Image 1 (cartoon, rainbow, N blue to C red):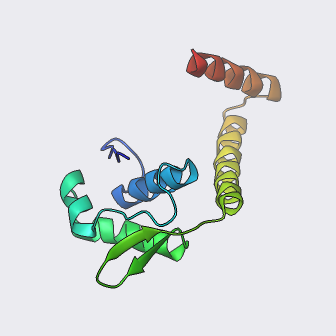
Image 2: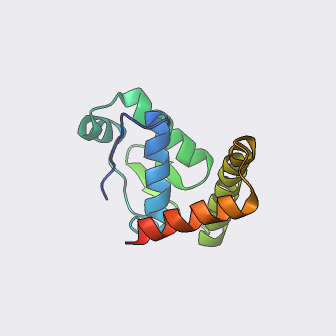
Length: 126
């Protein structure tokens, strides 16, 4: 699994790491019991601060997606995929609500929003 950090992203680096690891767990690219790189190794490979990777791992641990084993490192937890999927849907729903609010502020009506969405979907699928 490869983590890519974007300097153009509005998300903090630790959030990018968290999101990419969550997605990898969700897509079964990382499986229950699988070891993650050490905090120092991940920081070195991404060329980021150890504090940044530590914060990302702490966030994932709070969400019970990974666990720390003293002296051995971090491992992927046996997660409930339905729970993780529901959390992703809730996050997406929040973002879509914000986008729809921006569309309304820009004076767009329902048909214009749907038309733009369909166009973007068609562009993305090609």
